[in-house]
Length: 206
Image 1 (tube, rainbow, N blue to C red):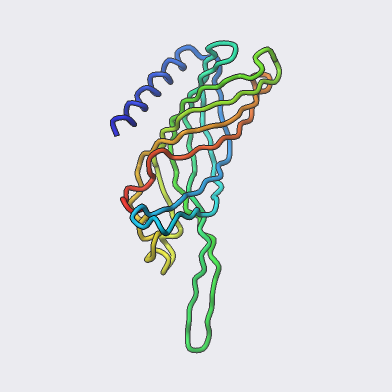
Image 2: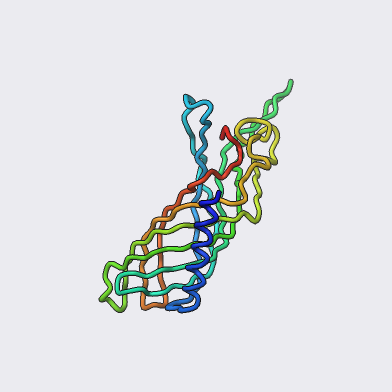
C-alpha cells in the first residue's frame, strides 16, 4: 500500500508540473471494452475464467508537455466505466410448465482515473501527422458500481457473484500500453491495453 501511495504522489507531482508549463490541453472521448478474469488461489485446479466484455464510456481532460523531439509526457483525469457482462440463464420449474429466460447482465463499475503517460514519438520531423507509442500508470478511484448480477435471483446467491457484494476495492492501480496518432495538434486517436496491478476485490480467495 505504501508503494501505491508513493506512485500516486509522484504522479500528482508530475501532473502539477505539466500543468504549470503546458504544451497542450484538451479533452478525450472514448470507449472502453473491459472484462474481469476470475481465479481462486485456494483452488488452483479450477483454473481461471473470464467474463464477457462490457462496453463503457471514457471521457476526460488531459495536459501534455513536450520534453524533446521524441518524448512527451501526458497527464489526464478521466471518468471511466469498467466492468464485465454476464450471460446467465434463469428459469422456473413448475408442475404445469417450465420457463427459461436468457439474461445479459451488465455489471458496471465507475471510476475517476488519474493517469500519467510517457509518449515516444516515432516520426518527430512530421508536422501534420505524428505516431507515438506510450506507456503509463492509471490510478482508479471507484465512485459508483451497479452490478445487475447482484440483483437477479438466484444468481446473487451463488459463487462467484456472492463473493462480490461489498468486496470491491475503492482504489486500484493499472498499467497502460498503447499507440497514438496526432493530426495537426488538433485531433488524435489512440488505442490501448491496460490491466490491473493489484486486485480489484478485497477477498483472499477470488
